[in-house]
Image (cartoon, rainbow, N blue to C red; front, side, top):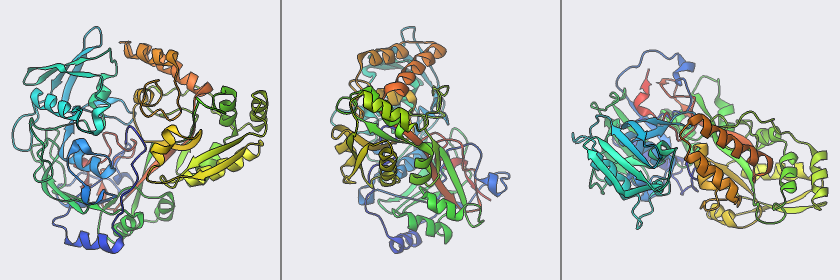
Length: 527
């Protein structure tokens, strides 16, 4: 998700037999279509005029009996997709990770960038009541409750919700604790959904303002929704949408091939290669969905020496890593997060393997014959393969890399503070959020321990800069420094892979997972 790995460790899931039994016995049918990149999946299957009606079933990995429809508790992709069907946010992220208005019709800052006025569009909840400023403030104050652990809490931290107020029924004045030029990113934050004032029970009959209405929910098995004909952006094409849980990739693929579902989320590169262009199913690749990297801790030996970090940048053969660890399902990185996103500094030379230069830098740093442990785990696809490939690449320059396997259950927490080098990945988020969550002195998920007051000051300067052009110049300066001496060796960006039945249309192809056009089932239809 936005502020961490693409998804947390998986819960135990249904096996193929259990999943198909659940699918056969679940009430109704439903839909899921992950959007992420421009152009509908129908591009490859003929496209055509949208047709109303039908039922679409989508298979996702889920969270077992502990699943909930509370949109503020969303963690897994299945949670996010269900929440998007039932609820709305004030804003969401476009394909380039810039914020686009949703329930918010507009936003406008004061001169100091520490007070923003948001105008709401005319929209209604499923019970017919209008979405108001009171609903917005209730939702955000619920998320910010210090006694709760809601996902968007950290993203909303800059808001002073006690000082924020409802100006009228459709106008909210947000007070902020400090100047925040990227305020719209807060509104688009993962999990920052708007719910009715006072709502707290979401699993029996949740009421949102989204494109689908609630029908039924069995945690760990099925969620069935129906079209909201009064949706503010226009009624969905589908009559019904059903999310089915299948934790094993083989179960999702086989159910798609067998016609038990029309959409399968999160497929492996090997599966995509086996079926792409064969005519039985459609393969959708969402580019730039997951940054793949090695994280070097810059506050401890040997990576407290920037010469060693630069040497490691030069040890990597990025194409070999993408081809080997991602089975070619991705593109090479250049040691910066957010390729293709708003504010990405794409004018820097593409870094390539240079073993002679790496040896020279290590010798200057007194690190001849360096030995280092690389922590990895089977917690994410490609991690163990990437570690083995990089070990062999480093050996060519005389660096001995010992690969250490960690627990899938505790890997992310273990590597946040322990060790000196680890495999790392991140889902889509704005580049500004990547800075604030991972690269400031006080960032709580600072895996590289990059802690520099002058870097922090640049971030605050950007947040206090009203001109987008001038702000972009500050972000570019920050990225040039990270490129030269940062702790993330970003070797690639993985595709996120989906599969659909051949009659499914309207699945977008141009945005990373977790963005606005991801899981836009209201835009999907059956030919």
